[in-house]
Image (tube, rainbow, N blue to C red; front, side):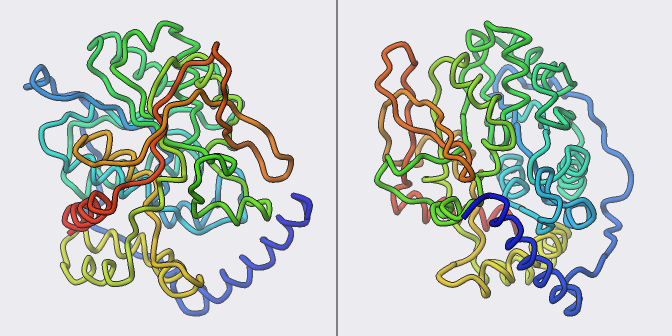
Length: 363
């Protein structure tokens, strides 16, 4: 099956699904009073010397209205929101004893503007006024073009040398551009948590994307800007990698969704609206699916709390193209490439504790 045929069939299936959702009024628009107004984007310096410092770099697609209007950045006919980035951000913002210096945004599950609005909506819902949201790349063609996001990454790492940890769970255009702006950036950051991409059957663990990729549904973080991913692997030094193989170990089930909805908080109202369609699809329509896969949450939680345990291995990593199936990672024995700690699978107890912690932070 060629990529062209796969996309054509996907369009037919999705348009039928969208029609059904429209007729069932699952696309009804609502307004939230607590999302009105602007937020303060100034960085609060109080107690910053005592805290762990993080930058979240992600395409946060928890913006149902924006995604429905514009679709996926790359596949405009794909109009189902991908809320895992929002769950990741909420989880991180509610982590005690850390400081989120800022959230840097790029295109991915939606356009950059849609994702920026999603992140700012989450800030408003949580009542957070001191975490800036920085707009980054709007296209893979922006690779190497300075944006407020790439400038922020470089500036914060140089302002707080050896202290800033970057959690990158989307396309890597902002990170690669920051490396182009400051080639010594790995000497300034504490670490990069590289959380994207799919391995080609080399880890002994199959992710939730294994079958879709075989049918031409590419992994849509790495493949949105594969040149940026290659650049970071080549110039970013040694850093931990969290591929898709570990990202499906925690889910939000239909039961979890009902529990969130029942709490009736402003956050719960926001989440149940944003997750309504994905909960319906992943909890009830897809065979063998247990619920919404949280993806970027898992590397974020591990980066924030080292007590979560996972199976890992050490290896250099390269990218390889597989035609219509897109680019994936392969293990490499090239001695000129830096080794990476690759997280493969969460231990069962850690997965259970992480899921309970997530739901608690969403109530």
